[in-house]
Amino acid sequence: MTSTKQRLFEATLKLAGSHGLVGLTVDDIAAEAGVAKGTVYYNFGSKDGLIDALLRYGVGQLADRLREHESEPDPVTGLESLVDTGLGFIAEYRGFSQILVSEMWRTPGQWHETLTLMREEVVSIVKAQLERMADAGRLPPDVDVSTAAAGLFGTLLVVALDWQTFQTHRSRADVRDSILMLLRGFTDPGRGRISNKQRRTQSTSGRD
Image (cartoon, one colour):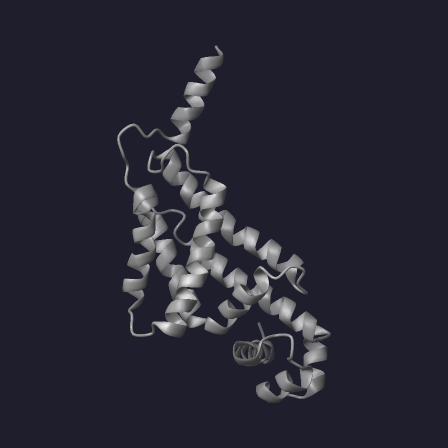
């Protein structure tokens, strides 16, 4: 990425974090970035093109960080690291995270289609981690993994922004542990729980 695009992204994040996206103008963004108005059009075509590129860039950065924990041998430790990494990203890019929360569930929204694709990418990473836990027998058999993944992603976003806005005295580790506390009932292997692999085997055996 060029330094000019980076400056335009940073300027948009700063302005959107305090004023929202709807009221932003190309003039505002250019002035904040210290570039000519034509620079925005040259790089992105329009304000909407800039914001679309910003959303794709930001979610791509978040997804790349979350994927770093896919190879963690213990899936529960991997999930805990994923939550911690998500908190760190949101703390670092608070303005971007505010845009996600304000726009992702707005229906209809101007960037709804783009955000739907971006959400699916991140939720799929969380879902893969939960599926690893299920295969290891670390989830109750009646947990719907897709719903749990979407719920965890939403919880992470909202709790992290609440931390950054209203509870800045709390440490990242404290907030992480609070989120994980909500998951303890799902991450402790209990008696009578079976893995997805075991369930598939039992289902196949029942048809023989």
